[in-house]
Length: 365
Image 1 (tube, rainbow, N blue to C red):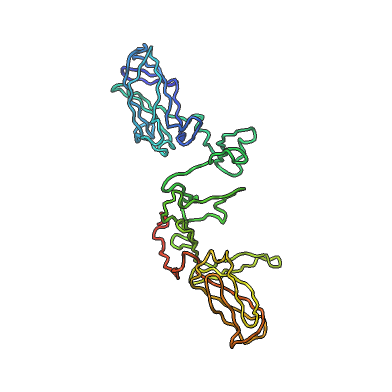
Image 2 (spheres, rainbow, N blue to C red; image 1 turned 30 degrees about the vertical axis):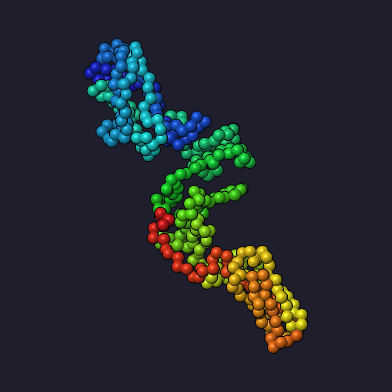
């Protein structure tokens, strides 16, 4: 218990508690603002308890003397037989007080009327604030095995049932710049080790680039360094662009071997099949599933004979079929393979489009 003296008043501070960093912890009754309870006993200089309504001004400072005032609040508080009870601080998150203001040592200065009581009171963390100490666990399902089992994490957030059926997200970030990952030197673009970021899941991982469905220009970018874009994913049309080779890894005789994707100057799909000439001719029906994905008003067909003949050519191309004939009016009955290539529906006019570079990758614009 600390005594504060001034010419007219003496204040015995009975209880002072502040919910440091508590603005973001959500309980069953809703969000808690950065509010502290404050109780005390007010007497005159002779030690006699006072009665009546008194004007209190509370100020939070970042130093025991001088320093910067980060918050000020004035109240008229009833005092009965010297005792009073009140709350200090904004009741809503971010109202007149930023979270970073609370993440520092703080002192409370009290003024009654025109007299400022000394010294300032150092505010210490409440039990709520201890839930964010290194090694702490924030959980809605505490049991005896959770505390202290951090598994190489400073803070572990656990929420919900094992099957996830009734769970809320363990963490939700909302904002124009909701999440920023930095290395120990404070550099966003610097990677301190090959495994700097770990993402582990036993279920789906979802990324919504256009969550409000407004058909904007949302993009997901990957940079090799602050000025070199490696790839981007478009939230507008689902297009994926990369600057390097595209490949897959295959187990070949116990070794990881890479096979590479073929690329085209246009957006095309292709299909393959086989047929057989009868008396020098054949009609090939285009697969209906393939036809549903492409524009068959114009397409290409390549044929390869699998037997001796004068050669093959293609004619009478329609949206449902094409014909294959032997050159020179031949009457051979040979088998053949074919490859059909057509523009993907909706991308008929796309050919080696210009992809504008991102001018400011920190904003994704």
